[in-house]
Length: 87
Image (cartoon, rainbow, N blue to C red):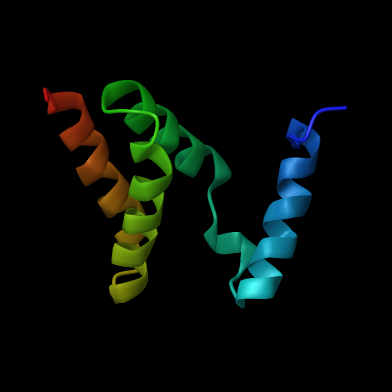
């Protein structure tokens, strides 16, 4: 038996609801597809280890903003950065 755990796609929403509840966040504020697309774009455009780091940094930036659209704006900024990245 593998030590790795895999979350089936149908369980992702359940996990998101549970994590939001634990963190005191509203599930309505989380766009799962947008976050997954961000992680994919960073993993493919920069490097796989950059994906979780960038999603954390993006969330941190959005959380510090008073703009209700801060998450989308932050995601757009780092996605554009990844598209231009050539390191």
